[in-house]
Image 1: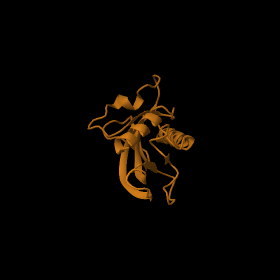
Image 2 (image 1 turned 30 degrees about the vertical axis):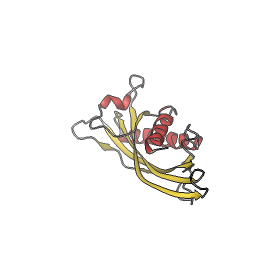
Image 3 (image 1 turned 90 degrees about the vertical axis):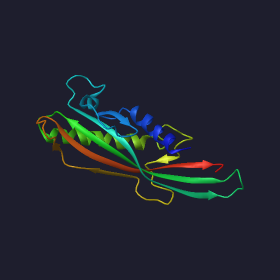
Image 4 (image 1 turned 135 degrees about the horizontal axis):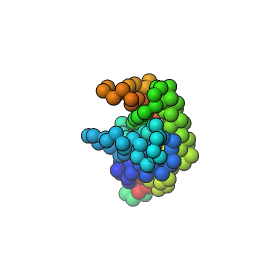
Length: 171
């Protein structure tokens, strides 16, 4: 497997998971994201939308089985950060905050719902800590802020950190 394979599995799973207010998950941040991408695929008048970008903050490997040249096993852990940006046209920042909480609750529920992110054979587990324990899912969210120059758009940044693991057979 590779980082690209794991990243693609996460993107595909989250984009198909019917997460509240999620417009899209992108494998990498773009240089420019058009405002309407935050509301892509939503009904007219929908007030909040989220784009998530995937960031691999770290990678660790550990041999877990010795079996000669072709039957060994390695445990690979990726520290994955989902950088999530909610944009909202609600008049009150409290309403944007409520939409962000609904998004985060739905995202965490989707992670809990499938420990292999819809990709058995690629992802051994995610959101379950690492081989030697640790945090399962860590969510950080910041206060809503008015975007400069747009008096009508509120943005909230949240990050969701978790360990994604794969078990390489024949490594």
